[in-house]
Length: 445
Image (cartoon, rainbow, N blue to C red):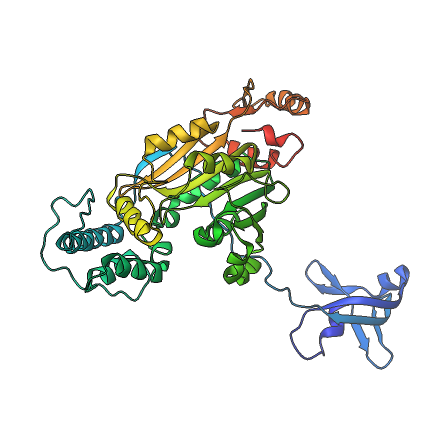
């Protein structure tokens, strides 16, 4: 009967009944009006009077039916994110080795470094760069130096006339093209590789569910916020509190529009001088620092200790840097010493030296991602008191472990609880993701 009112209405919009003035039902009359329609089926005639606004069918009468067009549902749900849970090693030392584009760019850079080395030798400057053995003197293809990068900077340096004042000309060129070091694809290669997400996932899985506080140091040059926020926002249930800091707050002004778009706050902090002051700059689940564009030019032990002060107990510290002894590392160290008139080796460490610094700062090295040409991502964690973990197998189909798990999580202990399973498709990953949202779920692994 409700549908019959819409037969004469033009259009194909969806209409819903929102108001009826009255409904009358006479069961006896309705039974009399019922007639045979077809084999085994009965029906009644429906009469619609639009003048009186009455619809009658047998012994049922509806008066004053009012309908409203239903609004179309807007597509508010974003595209689903498909995830795959895989085990990856904590230490990888040959990242980007199978990337042909990176290999070609590195070959081009080595050729340009070799040319620069010969040019400086003719001017009485001895430049010792490892890894140039076997580089031929054949003409290299002319690169297109329009895009900021190490290739562009080296091309400009190789093209200098060097008429007299060698140091001044090198210094002016490097300072003018400083953006080439900050945006180079090789120096930032690991940040475009899954290596960065691996480190972020490790930190996220070992922090309090649903919320993560991230603190970035020296972000005016490092600019990790654009990459880290995008990777963390993949998780729909995670709220990210991100603070980007610089030695002077006005250094963040050029990035203000991007910070506001990403929902990132800014603050002032110089970890090369002082520890985290606290408040917004402190108590972070993860502290990140990108300094792969040059030597640190400071006491590395003091810097790492100050970075660790910004993380809470059990928090993580992620550092992206170049290693001492590599072709790119030594080249960037030389270029930085030219522009800063400082010791090129200050703040440039080998892997073993970095590990010693972390140990002295009471940081445990959790994961390492190292490219084949000498850049590295170090993920460290502040030392935690030794706590006896609880292991609970969840393979049994009788589910007797459920009550034991409930009792364990209800205890006022902070010891980690490990759920173990021997079957590949047991659903333990999805179950842990759900249970971590419950009280005590931060203990689950």
